[in-house]
Amino acid sequence: MLRDRKHIFLVEGESGVGKTAAAIVLIDRLMSDPDLFQHTWKIFYLDLAMDGRHVEQFFLEAASGVFSDATIIIDNFHRIPPRCIENFSNLARP
Image: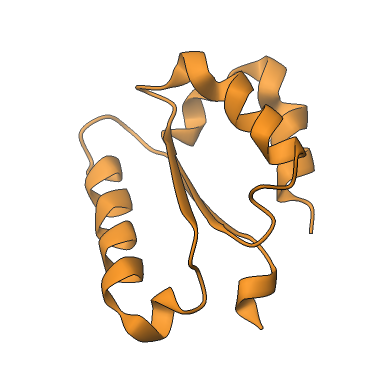
């Protein structure tokens, strides 16, 4: 069942092309479509342009397994701090 594993969506690109709008549309569609939402009851959104200071806390929570069966959307992924690349690699593993 899809709910038993995490799904990660990375949003990156040039400024002004609609990255955040696309991420919000994705969240809206996941939550409003019963067929999709039944597979992803937990949705986490991290915008690295806004929440860069919280990225370490995000990965600490990820290490605890809280995201194991969730949909994770990381907006502005191109802004991930170099010190967090290994943490992201660990998160992306099945």
